[in-house]
Structures are given as structure tokens and as C-alpha cells.
Amino acid sequence: MWEDLPLFPESASSLSGEVDALYVFLIAVSAFFALLICALVVGFTFKYRRRPGNERASRIEGSLALELAWTLIPLAITMVIFVWGARLYFALSLAPEDCLEIQVIGKQWMWKLQHPQGQREINELHIPLGRPVRLTMTSEDVIHSFFVPAFRTKMDVLPNRYSSVWFEPTRTGRYHLFCAEYCGTKHSEMIGTVHVLEPHEYERWLRGAVAGEAPAEAGRRLYEAQRCDTCHFAGPEARGPVLAGLFGRRVQLADGSTVVVDENHLRESIVAPNARLTAGWQAIMPTYAGLLREEEILQLLAYIKSLPAPEVEPRNGDGR
Ligand code: CUA
Image (cartoon, rainbow, N blue to C red; front, side, top):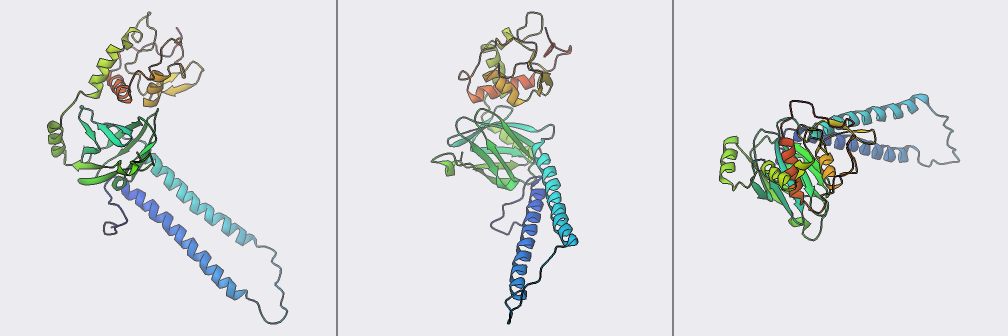
């Protein structure tokens, strides 16, 4: 519907239509009230213009009906905006299961992306049609923002933590990727292209692209090289929790609170292990801040997430 308007981007994801509908609704409400207020201002200047003679304005004592109307009508409209916006926000935030997981690292001034099978891309992203894609993103330096207008997807990319966003492309084609956060001299050159391919074309592209080591495989090597397994294992001698099956679980912390083990919690546990210590374990893990690159931390996370949950419930987070 909007394709012919040069200022409106293409609509190419499963949620872009809903984002547009809310946007148009907001514009319509704003335009309606702007015009209403303009009309009333003009109308009242004529209605209450100065008359000949010594006419005095009459005193207005107030009107309950009027007060209720201009309170309840805006309340109803803003509640519509709130509920609609909140539902859409949750839909945009909560990625479905079985997403294609892509790792994104922003740096001055390029986008580095990696596929789960190991293929790397810079400033380009090839994805298949009709499959939800989830990006786990971090930055090596300053704040960037991953912006694909055709998908109505924009998410800040921050140093020292992960942000994530998902989308499901609904049309094949090439779409602009922008950095939408001013990040230095060449911010405007931090651009790229998202290629949405038919699934069989995507398979062909995957085979043709130079496949590096898969992140989970590189993570396994790192896990062994850094000797994570000397502390993290099952048994009475263990000095840290078993990591297999930990991802996505809720664990208790030393201060009594609980946290769901997600990417950000695992990342913090690697670079600042004692900041949020799991209950029942001693603060003996050294920090790996500065020893691991962002890419390596992402690889470790991919490996930890890939570990199958053990059959016997490990003693994570209980006292010992
Ligand atoms: Cu990166 Cu602007």
C-alpha cells in the first residue's frame, strides 16, 4: 500500500504491517486533534471578538459534563495507544522458538555477523525467507544501532552487554541495513545489505560461503583451552556449577535473589564472576575481562547453550 510513497520504506517482515498500523493510528489521532484545536482557535477568535459598546464577558462556573468528557475521552484514547503499543512491543521483544541464531558485533565502523554453522559476513546478512531470525548483538567499542527499515527493526547495540532482536522476513529481496546511532566519523558509512533468499537459495549460499569454525565448536576449543572444566563439573570436588543445561533456567544468587540464566548473565559471570554469584559457590572464579574478545565470549556462550542438559539434576545453586 505504501510502496509507491518514496518516503515510506518497504514492508518485508511479519510484524512490519502492525508497526505501520500503529504508526498511522498515532498520526491520525495527532492530526485530528491538531486540526480540531486549530479550528477552535480560529472559530473562537471570531465568536468572542470584541463587540461594540461596553460588553463584559459572562462568568463561566464550570460544567461537570465537559470536565468528564475531556478527561475520559483522552484517557480512552491513550489507553488504546498503551495497550496496542505494549502488545506490539512484547511481540517484537519475545522471539519465537527455533529461530536462526545470528551473532552480531558492531565496531567502528562495520557490522560483523556470524551464522550458527560458522559462515562470517561483514556488512551483509544472508537469511532465508519465512524463518524467524534472532540476533544477539554486542559492540566492541561505542553504542551502535542495528536498523533495517524494511523489517521495522531497530535495536541499540551496546558494549559490555547483549541486546537482541528478532524478525521474520516475508519477502525475498535486498534491504538496507543502517547504523542508527551516531558512533563517530564514519557512522554514515556503517551500512550494509540484508539479502532475503528463498530457502533453497539460502542453502546454496551457505554451502558456497567460506564456512569458518562454527561458534559452538570454537567455543568448545576455548572452553578446553581456558580450562573451564577444571572447576565446572559434576561431583563433590566441583568448584563451580555444571554449565550443561543451565541456559534458560532460574537460579538463586548468593544474595537470595534469583535470575534467569540468559546471555547477559553468562557474559557477566565470565567477565565479572563475583558480581552476581550463584548461591552455594565461593567467589573464587577469576575474571576473564580483557582475556577474551567479544567474539570469543559469544563462542563460549554458543558452546554452553549447545550442551545437552544432564540426566541427573546437577547441584546448581543449592548450598554445599
Ligand atoms: Cu555505528 Cu553509527
